[in-house]
Length: 65
Image 1 (cartoon, rainbow, N blue to C red):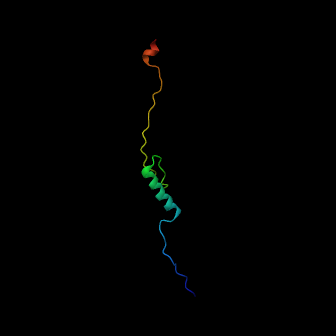
Image 2: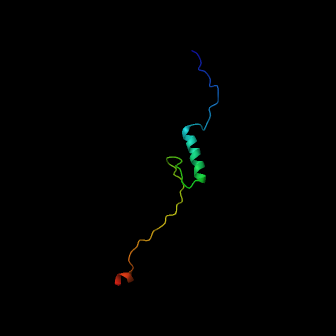
């Protein structure tokens, strides 16, 4: 029975599409304010300040007049 042919070149790591996307997402997250999801389980570490808006309720003094 003949032997299978050997692989002529070494297997390259990091060329899978998911690996390329992961590398790109990590590079973007370092500089951009808009964060990209890296993996399904690891969400970006987003630190966004929420601004509370004041609602225009009539004050007690205005309600008495």
